Structures are given as structure tokens and as C-alpha cells.
Image: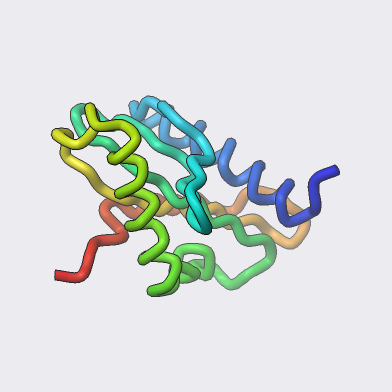
Length: 125
């Protein structure tokens, strides 16, 4: 039986996928896991391959879901993206980016806001 946290995350991922699909994205993979990293959604946006981190928060201050990406989490996302490309070599020639979709819910669980930040995580140069 899934925990409340897992159920909240699954709801957020479904909501984010529907939001992205409404914007014309095509979801091609979900919950890609490697070692201790995971990519929630993998999508195509025109010719770009997009790795999507979904952050869902209930009853938090506005913007807290989007701000919850730490340096450590960003590093894990970059590693997971590299693993995805290694396992899907046909994707290596596509433009790549990592987006964040933040799902904000009221304390009672009603959807308050969806924030989509394109190209939110980039490697340090």
C-alpha cells in the first residue's frame, strides 16, 4: 500500500504529465530509475528531449515546491539524464534540457498552481 507521500508524488506526476501534454509535449517515459537517482517524466517537446522533475507540495507557501530543488538534487538529475542517454543512444543527438514542474496544492488537497520552469537545471560550466 503506497504511503501518503508516494500517493502525493504520483498525483503530482499525473497532473504534471497532463499539463505538459496540454502544452503539446509527448510523454515517452515515466519514473526512470538508476542507482539513487530518478527522472519523474521524460518527454519530447518538438525536437527536444526533456527530463522533467516534478515537485508536489501541499499547504506550503506559494513557490516552495519550485524552490525545493537543491544542488544535491540537481546533481542527481544530471547524473540520471546521463544514464538515460547512455541507455537510449538515439537520444544523444537531440537537444536536451531538464525542466521542473511544481504542483502546489492547498492544505485540503485542491490544486492551487502549476509552475513549469523550462531549462531549470543546467550543468555547472
